[in-house]
Length: 159
Ligand code: HEM
View 1: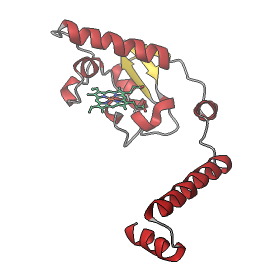
View 2 (view 1 turned 120 degrees about the vertical axis):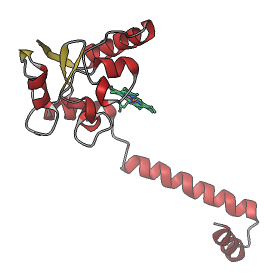
View 3 (view 1 turned 180 degrees about the horizontal axis):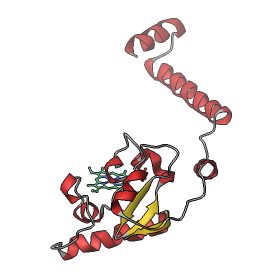
């Protein structure tokens, strides 16, 4: 950058402030024109297109925790499911989070209440057993349940 500035100062006979001003104006013009031709995608439109691409969530009724494992994202044709407090949610719209390779893939196809309550990724906490949890952990689980209820479609419950 310093070399470019020196070359410009040499070629234009301008002071370093002059060169800096010209570079700043050039950058501003570039970003304005770039913004006109390549406007940032509207998040509402992206959400709409994503939801269009997803099949309507399929209601499963009551299923076992073993059956829930079939919906862990390993079969891309099946919906991605996850259970919180015994209720199963279709989280397919968040495949980047829960799908294979995603940061929360370990929750897919599982009833993960204990892990969510404890904010912990331990394999042993991937269970619906919330016995012995303290009030803060139970509060946190309540918040997670609310989040899932508001964001995802409930498609069944665990027997
Ligand atoms: C360093 C710690 C953590 C950071 C920085 C972090 C960050 C985030 C961010 C940014 C999101 C939103 C992603 C999005 O909507 O695109 C998210 C979602 C989520 N986080 Fe974490 N997280 C952390 C730890 C944890 C832990 C310990 C748990 C539970 C054991 C957890 C569970 C979740 C879940 C389940 C979601 C997805 C919720 C949904 O479906 O909308 N996170 N996290």
